[in-house]
Image (cartoon, protein in one colour):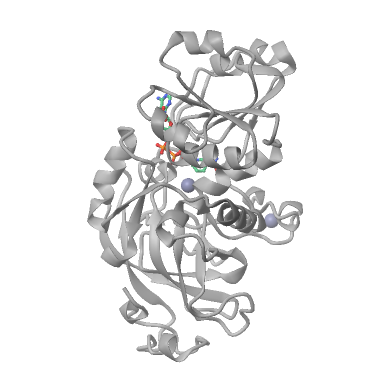
Length: 374
Ligand code: NAP
Ligand code: ZN
Ligand code: ZN
């Protein structure tokens, strides 16, 4: 897939090199690009086209090379959290190459390897934005299933190209292959952020609940941070993988004895589980002053007996993705430690089948779409 696939690009767009300029075929406000979209809630994804805005002064045009499939994509195309905006083009684990830059872009050049995660804009002035916590800005713009500042729907990474402000674009270090790096843009930073915030490191006993897309990144990052890492998975089916990724211990939560044996033994638990969990049982695994951070986003509420927090002065917390600078920090950390996701690259026409396999727990450990097949 090349920039030639663009059917229209604004003639007013400033592009920074000749090859990208050759993509300009007609003068028009909007570009149309191939994408895979869910036309309605619960409908299978199908090939279509979606508009992309002209490359503005501060924008980069990215030729998408790979896009990861996050479980959040599945929640959203099924209106699992809220009513979605359709057609919906999911995808917030985007890895690609800069194909053109706006006139005022300073940080990127054509040919740079770049990534885009869950956010493409924010208010840029609130306390959270100024502190680099754009993910908590109440005016942040999600990469898809949201609306930009002009009120136009945003379309995600299951597509050939995307136009993104350079401030929401990060650099993928040379040492990281684009397919295996794509999931770092959501799964990677979603685990890196709480692990660093709650100081996973030497002497800390960290449990990762669920060894899926997020969980396997958690094991690798917590291990690289120097923590003692335990995987709490439903079964021992993926034990060999978990230990190879850096886990020190591996337990099956289907086994009643696990909860007795491990009671009171973790400083930090990060749950990546996509379904409601019996919270009390997991809180009981925390040592005094331990923290359980939930990053999983189940569609149903969970029940909580507050006595499970009183005992042991325990904390139950949540965490959502990470900021833009933090995402770059995470990518650089992963490059230094040789950390990437373990991926199964699929063709675009396998997206619906991949969704079913994620729901069935049949993924090791992230599906990544080859954008050339879109
Ligand atoms: P995933 O690849 O499907 O992994 C989820 C894992 O949870 C599964 O591999 C499984 O691990 C475990 N699990 C699933 N159902 C379970 C059940 N009923 N009981 C116990 N364990 C169960 O999904 P993902 O992409 O990692 O995403 C996980 C969740 O995080 C989703 O809800 C997603 O929307 C959310 N998320 C949140 C953020 C954030 O910013 N907070 C960012 C991205 C995603 P085992 O097979 O090892 O048991
Ligand atoms: Zn995600
Ligand atoms: Zn803000």
